[in-house]
Image (cartoon, rainbow, N blue to C red; front, side, top):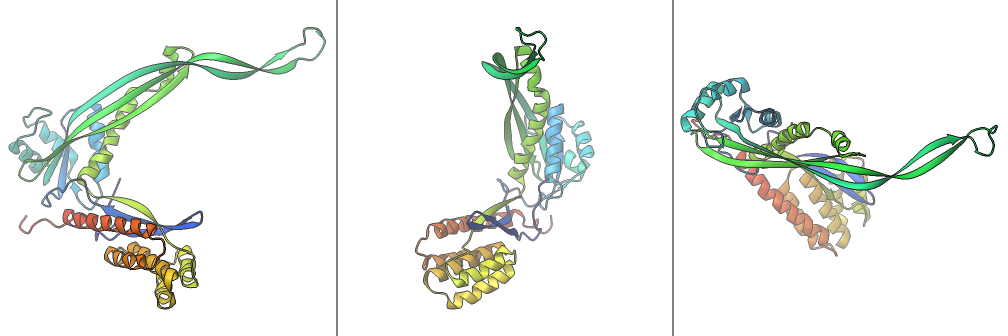
Length: 345
C-alpha cells in the first residue's frame, strides 16, 4: 500500500546514508499523480466490469494501493459491485451518466473507477543448448578386483531445452467524476517471463511454472501504476553533500553523519559567518541540503544559487539547482491536487 507521507504535504527526511567517500542524505517526499483529478472527487467506488479472475485481481490490488492514502477514501466495494449488476452498459465502452450515478449512490462515493478491459498475451519460445554436468561415479579398478572402489568425478555435455513463456497483461481503467463523465480512460501494461530447463520440451514447459498464475500477478501489478496515475505517491532521492573542505564544513558534517541534522544546520550557519571562498560555498551548499530535508524548497533554491557563486566546480550545484526547481514545480501541482473540494460540494 502506498500512502502520502504527511497530510500536511511536508516531506519527511530519512537519515543520512554514507556511500563510499561521498555522503548522501536520503530525502523522502510526495509527488503528484500523473493526472489531476477534480478535487470534488474525494471518495471512490471501485468496480470490475470484466468479471474475470484477472480483472478481479486488478481491482482488489488497486483498492489496496489507494486505501489509507490522503487523496481518497474507498467506498464499500461490495455495494458498488452489486449495483454494477443492475446497470446497463457495454464493457469497454463508457458507462452512462445515469449508470455512474447509480453506482455512486449505492456506494456513497463521489467518483467511480472501473476495470473495463483485460487482455492477456502468452508466447512460448524454445532454445536448445548443451549444459555441462558433473557427477561422481564409484568403480572398482578393472585390473584389481580386490582393490577398494574409487570415486571419480565425470563431466559430460548434456543437450537441454530452455522453455520461456512471455506473458503480457493489458488492463484498461476508467475514472468517472461527480457528473458521471469520464475523467480519464487509460491502459496499464505489464510483461514478465518464466523459464524452465529440461531435456525435453514438455518437461521444460512444466518447470517454467504456471503462466496463469503469472498473469494473475501481472494483472495485480498494473494497479501499482494505475494508482500513481490518479493519486499522489511517495518517492525518495539521495542528495550528495560536502563533508570536507574546511573546518566549518567538517564541523557540521560530523553532526550530520551522526544523524543530528538540526545540530549540523546550526553548525553550518555559524560556519557561514567565518568561512571564505570554496569552504563557504560548501557550507552554504550543505545548508541547502539541510533546508530541503526540512521541506523548505524555496530556501534550498536560494542557498544553492548563492553557493554556486563561491564554488570552483559548480557541476554538482548546477544539477542540484535543476532538481530543486523540478521539486518546486512538482510541489505546486501536488498542492493543487490535494486542495480541499470547493465549498458547497
